[in-house]
Image (cartoon, rainbow, N blue to C red; front, side):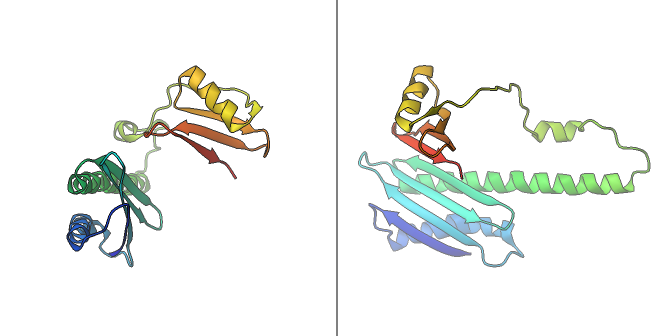
Length: 182
């Protein structure tokens, strides 16, 4: 595994670097047979003293990403490693289940029922509500006002200047973000 570790408002000490490599390195057992696994780690410290770690592991058919804030940077590293391991296990379970299902379909001589099996449906996402609405052209400030009036964490709108779909959202730090679609 190749590590790219950088710090913002924090010096990445050798002890901190070794701890990150040790904890994230334990995930290496899941990547056996995969060449050149790159691990991007970003460590930040905010003015309130909280530390944040962001870990991104780009793979050919999967992007693993986790972030965690904590007063203790070492505890944050532990939490992120646990999150990544859960993501990897969940992905491997899905892949293995799909392979087993394909093998069963190929071996079966009887027609396959149309509905999903009980094992598949428990891991799938269920859409319980669908909304339809028109996107009103506006600027991002008006969209933030609309979002706050509705009491939502995000708001979708058509940007009046670019005529493209955008999303404004409230960040954990209380500030706002803007997502612009291409």
